[in-house]
Image (tube, rainbow, N blue to C red; front, side):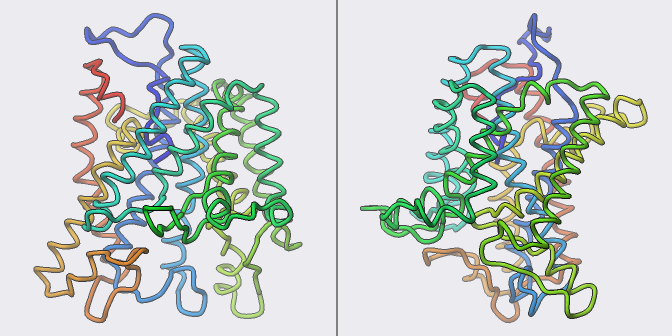
Length: 408
């Protein structure tokens, strides 16, 4: 997803194996962070296709701590995708210039939207013609918008992105467009009428996610510095975001639909407090997830700089993070096909795996699926299968300069 199509900005080898003059070596800490994000993403998608649970993991009336945590950790993925995609655009701009970065964002944005409609819809549903405005389309639309917005000064872009994130939950109703379809596409998400294409689900409306990409792009100069002082500042920024999350959660600001209650046992109270709104992403959701991601990246850099953590070229998360779009491209049909084969072998209802309605099938029928431990086991198997594929493709991209490889 973010950086699902990411410019090879931290360093790229020529066909002869030498590093291009003036190009920075890849930042292994960013790659590992990306790798963690796509690995967690795969957990969520394995759960979708393999779970026996007939409830939403965030439905506090039916879920338990295991299912809730397994779902909540995957909340880190989308904010990380959009934020790091903006960062990657800024890093590419520092090497190739703003016009080149703008063209790259435009081309890749159009490519992503096309891939969502022409390929990923089929991969998700096993039904030709089915598609939704998912994370790939959301990233693509945001990149298209960023291809123009990146000509604004970075400080202004950061202020605009931060202001929208801070205020949209409480102010959008006053400025929302009259058109329900337009509002669905740019802010609220949900079921939208797409003209002759008919109704389609919008999971990632433009503005809330574009704000994260714009902020990632705007802070590129700070995140390019990997020394301890900069890493400590980044750690502080993440901690400040988490502290602000606790504050606004307690006072009930910036959440939208979901409050919390602490009147039951401690586990239920914890889940209720952390049950933040993703669709569309609330301020509380953004502060909690982005704060954790920034702290993870900062801590990773500090221990890496201290020499206590080696992020070698064979590190699984680094391998995944160097080819995130390829990971995404392969993992959905892999998981979906594995679920169909498993269902056929074990006698589970297979109709569930073919999506015919506008939305996805998310409530498995009786007699279908695995408990959470089984879902985790399948997830680990999927990661094991993807590791050699990603390693091979990463080496292929480093050894060749074909234009189509850059799109993947």
